[in-house]
Amino acid sequence: LAKTTQPISMDSYEGQEVNITCSHNNIATNDYITWYQQFPSQGPRFIIQGYKTKVTNEVASLFIPADRKSSTLSLPRVSLSDTAVYYCLVGSGTYKYIFGTGTRLKVLA
Amino acid sequence: GAVVSQHPSRVICKSGTSVKIECRSLDFQATTMFWYRQFPKQSLMLMATSNEGSKATYEQGVEKDKFLINHASLTLSTLTVTSAHPEDSSFYICSAIKTGVGYNEQFFGPGTRLTVL
Figure 1 (tube, rainbow over the protein chains, first blue to last red):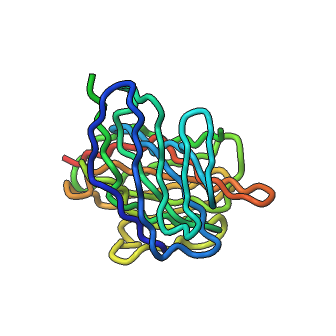
Figure 2 (tube, one colour; figure 1 turned 60 degrees about the vertical axis):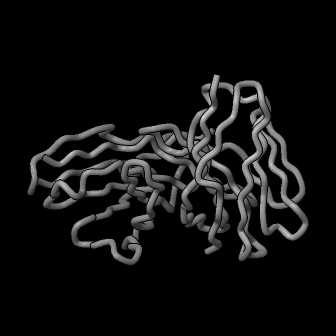
């Protein structure tokens, strides 16, 4: 199971773009990279998933370099409601995820 | 997206009693479900993998006789915390795997807050 490393915390201001990078040096060929968001006392919520290059949806973009040993979640124009913990997870098949520390994002007014 | 529910959302019990937590996939069938535990300000810790029709697989350090898991149908897995003690107080979260053609997606439940007095 690939281990992930993320910054413990980040601060940003409303309206800014936030980029959170995750390193996963031992990612396997079949592994996908998935990012989740978690608010206090709630279960994690799916944000985006990718395998390589760039993926974009209505809430975020995910950038994955060719070697796939890292990935960057990009949140455009964050608001106060984006304050949460963001987890980068790597896995495939049975999706037996091992959660890392996550990144605690605080958006300031 | 798919919906996973948990019941109850919060429970308070006395030390020594047993508590059952249900995890349901509401609009899809899930052969595989996972149970996690999360302490305040910490990350989710995987406890066990629940497989429909077979025994659960527990992670190292998780007592299988204390945390009983039953996955009797494709939409329901239950976690029973037996003889609960204050140190079992935590936030318990389940997830379910939705399998499609060429993909698997994992959906998480809203969590259950257990407080043992």
